[in-house]
Amino acid sequence: MKVSCSVTNTGKRAGKETIQIYVAPEQKKDRPVHELKAFEKVRLDAGETKRICVILEERDFSRYDTDKKMPVPVNGTYEIQVGASSTDICLCGKIDLFFAEG
Image 1 (cartoon, one colour):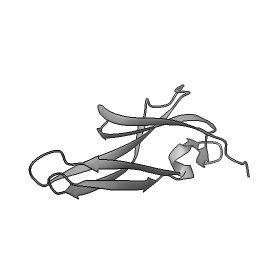
Image 2 (cartoon, rainbow, N blue to C red):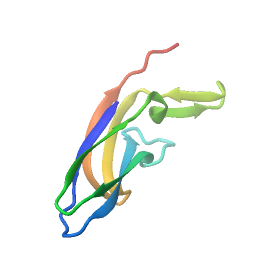
Image 3 (spheres, rainbow, N blue to C red):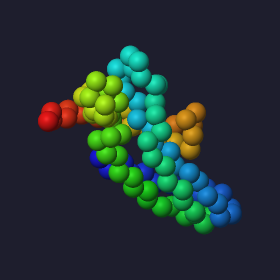
Image 4 (tube, rainbow, N blue to C red):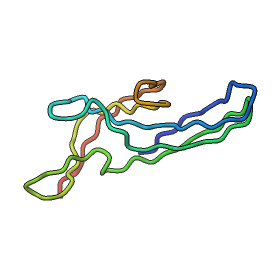
Protein backbone atom coordinates (compact mmCIF):
# COMPACT_ATOMS: atom_id res chain seq x y z
CA MET A 1 0.00 0.00 0.00
CA LYS A 2 1.32 3.42 -0.93
CA VAL A 3 0.88 6.21 1.63
CA SER A 4 1.66 9.73 0.50
CA CYS A 5 1.30 13.25 1.83
CA SER A 6 2.63 16.73 1.23
CA VAL A 7 4.78 18.52 3.81
CA THR A 8 5.27 22.29 3.83
CA ASN A 9 7.80 24.33 5.76
CA THR A 10 5.79 27.37 6.84
CA GLY A 11 8.78 28.90 8.62
CA LYS A 12 11.29 31.48 7.46
CA ARG A 13 14.30 29.12 7.71
CA ALA A 14 15.24 25.77 6.25
CA GLY A 15 14.43 22.85 8.50
CA LYS A 16 13.86 19.12 8.81
CA GLU A 17 10.79 17.12 9.73
CA THR A 18 10.31 13.42 10.35
CA ILE A 19 7.01 12.12 8.98
CA GLN A 20 5.78 9.06 10.90
CA ILE A 21 3.30 6.48 9.58
CA TYR A 22 1.23 4.52 12.12
CA VAL A 23 -1.12 1.58 11.60
CA ALA A 24 -4.07 1.37 14.00
CA PRO A 25 -6.28 -1.74 13.83
CA GLU A 26 -9.99 -1.07 14.35
CA GLN A 27 -10.21 -4.32 16.35
CA LYS A 28 -7.85 -3.52 19.21
CA LYS A 29 -8.28 -6.67 21.31
CA ASP A 30 -4.79 -7.67 22.46
CA ARG A 31 -3.29 -5.10 20.07
CA PRO A 32 -1.58 -1.73 20.60
CA VAL A 33 -3.61 1.43 19.93
CA HIS A 34 -1.31 2.03 16.96
CA GLU A 35 2.15 0.96 15.81
CA LEU A 36 4.86 2.96 14.06
CA LYS A 37 5.44 1.21 10.72
CA ALA A 38 7.47 3.70 8.68
CA PHE A 39 9.05 7.11 8.79
CA GLU A 40 10.71 9.49 6.39
CA LYS A 41 12.96 12.41 7.26
CA VAL A 42 12.70 15.38 4.90
CA ARG A 43 14.67 18.61 4.58
CA LEU A 44 12.72 21.66 3.43
CA ASP A 45 13.79 25.17 2.56
CA ALA A 46 11.65 28.03 3.89
CA GLY A 47 8.25 27.91 2.17
CA GLU A 48 9.06 24.67 0.32
CA THR A 49 6.57 21.81 -0.13
CA LYS A 50 7.58 18.21 -0.84
CA ARG A 51 5.54 15.09 -1.51
CA ILE A 52 6.49 12.10 0.65
CA CYS A 53 5.65 8.52 -0.40
CA VAL A 54 6.04 5.45 1.83
CA ILE A 55 5.16 1.84 1.03
CA LEU A 56 3.45 -0.33 3.66
CA GLU A 57 3.72 -4.07 3.10
CA GLU A 58 1.79 -7.14 4.23
CA ARG A 59 4.07 -7.54 7.25
CA ASP A 60 2.92 -4.13 8.50
CA PHE A 61 -0.55 -5.63 9.02
CA SER A 62 0.63 -8.90 10.58
CA ARG A 63 0.79 -10.43 14.05
CA TYR A 64 3.20 -13.10 15.16
CA ASP A 65 1.44 -16.48 15.31
CA THR A 66 3.10 -18.59 18.02
CA ASP A 67 1.64 -21.84 16.61
CA LYS A 68 2.89 -21.20 13.07
CA LYS A 69 6.04 -19.49 14.39
CA MET A 70 5.76 -16.71 11.82
CA PRO A 71 4.04 -13.38 11.17
CA VAL A 72 0.51 -13.79 9.76
CA PRO A 73 -1.45 -10.91 8.17
CA VAL A 74 -4.71 -10.03 9.94
CA ASN A 75 -7.84 -9.17 7.95
CA GLY A 76 -9.76 -6.13 9.09
CA THR A 77 -10.19 -2.40 9.05
CA TYR A 78 -7.11 -0.30 9.74
CA GLU A 79 -6.63 3.40 10.21
CA ILE A 80 -3.48 4.76 8.60
CA GLN A 81 -2.21 7.74 10.61
CA VAL A 82 0.40 10.29 9.49
CA GLY A 83 2.03 12.80 11.80
CA ALA A 84 5.12 14.31 13.32
CA SER A 85 4.79 12.07 16.41
CA SER A 86 2.39 9.60 18.02
CA THR A 87 0.63 12.52 19.75
CA ASP A 88 0.64 14.82 16.70
CA ILE A 89 -1.39 12.94 14.07
CA CYS A 90 -2.52 15.32 11.32
CA LEU A 91 -3.80 12.98 8.59
CA CYS A 92 -5.88 9.77 8.83
CA GLY A 93 -7.55 7.37 6.46
CA LYS A 94 -9.21 3.96 6.79
CA ILE A 95 -8.74 0.85 4.70
CA ASP A 96 -10.30 -2.62 4.75
CA LEU A 97 -7.79 -5.40 4.10
CA PHE A 98 -8.47 -9.04 3.23
CA PHE A 99 -5.48 -11.29 2.72
CA ALA A 100 -5.51 -14.52 0.70
CA GLU A 101 -4.65 -17.60 2.71
CA GLY A 102 -1.88 -19.84 1.66
